[in-house]
Length: 241
Image (cartoon, rainbow, N blue to C red; front, side, top):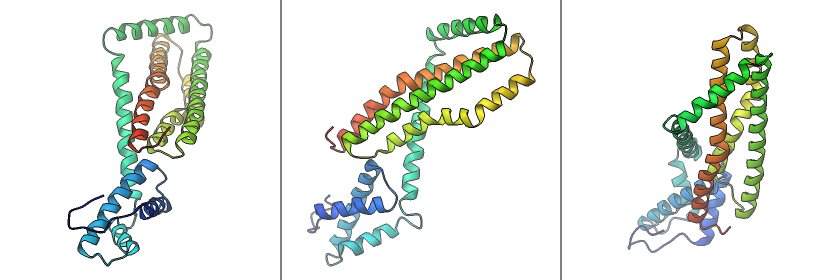
C-alpha cells in the first residue's frame, strides 16, 4: 500500500490485522467491505506517516476514523448495501422483461391461457387460486431453505461473511416473509369481496403466471449469476475454496 516514494514507513501485517479487527468492532461484518475499508485506512495512515513519521499507528487510525463522521462506517456499509440491492433488483427486472419479448412472450401468453382455462372450469376457482398462492409460498420457502443451506456451506469453506450473501438472503426470504405476514390475508380478503367472474379469473391467472415467472428467475437464473459473481469476489480477495 504505497502512497509515494517519499514514504518510508508502511503498514505491516500485524497492523493490517488490527485494521480488520477495528472494522469488525465497528459493525462491519462483511469481509469484502472490511477489505475495502482496510485498504483505504492503510493508505490514509501511510499518507499521514509521509508527513509525520513520528505519529503512532493508533493515533493515525483515530484521526482517519474521525473523518467518517458520527456514524462511522455505517454510512459506507449502507451505501454498499443499497448499491448492491439495486443492482440485483435491476438484474431481476431485466430477466423478467426478457419473457415479454419474442419468442418467450408466446409461451407466457399460452401459459396464462392454460391457467385461465383450468381455473375457469374449476367448481371452486377462488379456492383453486388461493391454493396456487399457498403452493407458491411453499416453493419459495423451500428455495430459501436450500439457499440458506448452501450459503452456510459456502461460509464454512471461506470462513468469511460476504455482503453479496447478505443481499441474496434478503432477496430469497423477502417474499416468503411478506406472504406469511400479510400476503395470504390480503389475497383471502380480496377474494371474499369480489365475484369470481371472467375478468377476475383472468386477472388472477395473469398474476399467478407473473408470480411463477418471478419464482423461476429467483430459483433458476439468479443462483447461477450469484455463484459466478461470488466466485469472482472470493478469487479477488484471495480466499482459497
